[in-house]
Length: 295
Image (cartoon, rainbow, N blue to C red; front, side, top):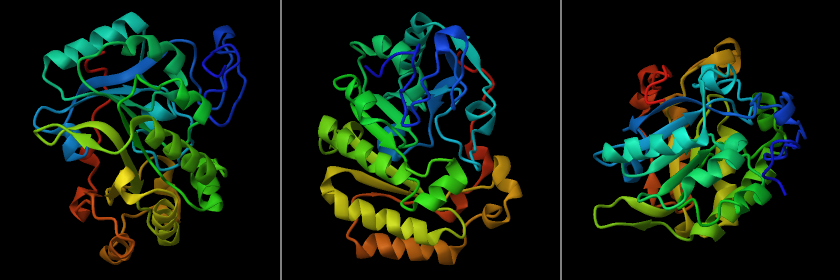
């Protein structure tokens, strides 16, 4: 019984806030769906964006407190507009009419009781794009509704998770979540054009001065799951944002040396299927404008 707003325990924080009476938990979300943007997005992994884009819906608020969040204005600031579930479903079909390959729900966890009824019988795959900090009990409610999971795996070291995201239990919760995701949707599958139809892509973004964490993330993933059960997406796009600009340790982009160490570990561990980025991907212009487009 996790999918409720009057005693909210959707994420691992389990705040128990009564959002139907105006109480706000850690994420800051209320009892109405709030989104900041809905549009085709061309900067996801190639098997999601393709030629026509991924139909991204950016939800406001977040269950994590990442100090470096590139979407700080909506994740922590709560910028966006409240909409009804009926309007959300209309948005899906407006995106589908534009030719998108999938419907991509970006940080939707805290609104899932309201979102779930909108996902029935969509003609394209549904992507759950999340921070990896999830409750297995909540994920189980999505079985049969989500075809593609796109979680981050940010941290393998509890102290790093606590420092940057206020979630010291992140490694355990993320491992449990990825295990449940793989169990639900199975190995990655693709259509004749190379677009993903089902499966799991695990993202890891490298942080400056935190290479030990990144190496441990790769080791943890390699020892916990068969390598053909998911795709690994190694991201070098970190750009100082939010409060991260003020924290000296992470106030710069990663260096070629740092990225090289993580790439070598990826190869050493035998991760052959997946994605990497060029260091040139660390650009602020890759963050879309959260201006209410498509809402």
